Amino acid sequence: MTDDTLDAIMHVMEQAFDPVYGEAWNRRQVSDALMLANTHCVVIGAGATGLWHDPAEAVGFALLRKAADEEELLLLAVAPQHRRKGVGHRLLERAMAAARERGSAHLFLEMRDGNPAEFLYRAFGFEQIGRRPGYYRGAVDGPIDAVTFAKRL
Image (tube, rainbow, N blue to C red):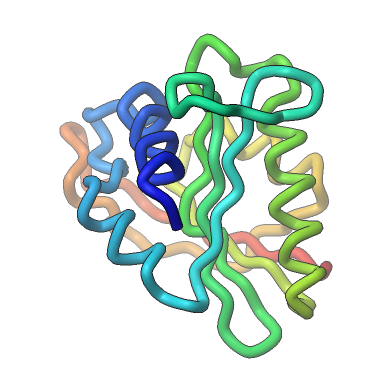
């Protein structure tokens, strides 16, 4: 992991997560996660190729953790001004392809109930497999349930 990658992730993180829900990670949490060999990230720019050269050009990222033949999508974020333009779709496609390349057979994710990204996950064939009542306790109007989804890769 490079400082540019961490800067790019944090650039998107600061824009993408509404503080009302308490979901965003801080720089130390992301840095610590990326230092682990089983944690991987995908960062994407706005153009069709998704390339970025400067952290400020990043518009989305996915952070994944691998264990055995499974991966968990820890975070997926798209800067608000780039939502509903296919960025999340391209980002999830790349994250899933990378997980397959690492030999993962399943991808799991957990999200806040009511998260508008649910339509994206369902479009990719993720199915709800569980619910954690009151999991997000940091939310202003919380606690809010977490919903768990899974997809066979």
